[in-house]
Image (cartoon, rainbow, N blue to C red; front, side):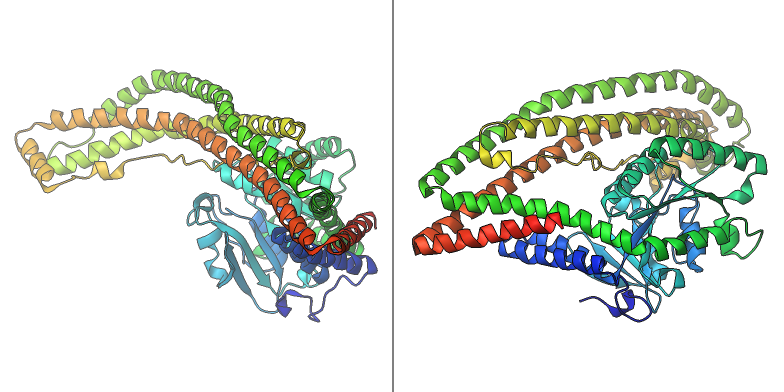
Length: 583
């Protein structure tokens, strides 16, 4: 049941056009047909989209690179700091902001229902600090606010930033692309627009026409810098999208949220969003529904075709076909192991690549770090043994961090680039594998939805963390503590210094190898996920065919009249679905 405060001020759906109503009715009808066919996931998908169309909701996704200030811009538009902001990556999962008469929030975990949450608790679910790379498995977050801008159906979506060190964040944004109806692209002046942003905007632009571009943090740049950034952004976006992008609005979300500084283009931005609601809102909702109708209708046609063919064939032939299909699928699953050899080559290549890069780093960093450590070691007083140990180990941490931390972002960026290329290659190999199966002569496999999603890419989140081993810098036991006292009394500080030197080298070597280990582990896990997804597709094909056989066997046991009645219903459903797709 839809909560009334998710509607506009009147509590009624705001679509109001015959087109919107037709799309919603079509989706509801597809949901009913899906339930007749026993396909609950299609039914749930169609019902959810129908609800969105009925309410007139359309999603304006705020997208851009990490630290563009997307959440701040949205908070300023809402007139309320409802979305967390901070100096570290904040948004770990897409957060939908909808109209509501009262300020509230809710969270849904994977495989679960919506759970109410207080808006001030959102950081526990959407921030990297409290939910790193969505380790808590949050599937959705919705915030309801009494914002006039959202009162007639527009919903904002705060997406994870692209290009942060957290690969899972970028994947979360890309996975949300099919649900985007319009885009609010937040760029900056340094750099104006990054390559990953450009690729995402191009992809979104192929799906939706309404793209509004905002040049944020205008208070931190000069007029000349903003002019250059605007010119560059316009040029590359016009070229990539193949159309003019319209005005680029120079704003400062932070200034507007705090009610200070010049207004700049803020009123124009608000007018553009309000104009989108008035002029395009209903069309946006309708197009979102139409995309869903086409996608879900095709799925149902495949099921209907399978049901009909099973009725027209002798049961024995269907059993033989399913047996052949099972054999082919079993062989396909066994041959999945052969793909491992292809993937293994990528794993070895990446391991060798980052091993050589690590060796180059250590060859340069180790001598410098040792020299710095020795210089700064001289300034530490040699008095009390336990205190001396803490200070020299802390010095080792400081020196190691000084060298490793500037290197890590560059290395992690290269690892991410290489990993994405491998993930894309995995998907292409998987789709080639499925294509060959569809051409194997087994009709059921020819109708298989053999399109692994290249955007999801079976990417897994990075688990890389810089390890300072702070606990090692503390006396691990009373015995160690007493030993340090004795070492200090007998003036044996060189023993502690030697341990600190070893600790320095250990920190450099261990942290420099973690990028290599992380990317290789992610490749291995991606391979496993790819195989799982292929098996899931094969299982779904088998499930549909076997269910069709059972339905056909049941109808034939009841006699020719029952078969004809079922065929008539299927023909009617196929014609109805075709008609719905053509409308």
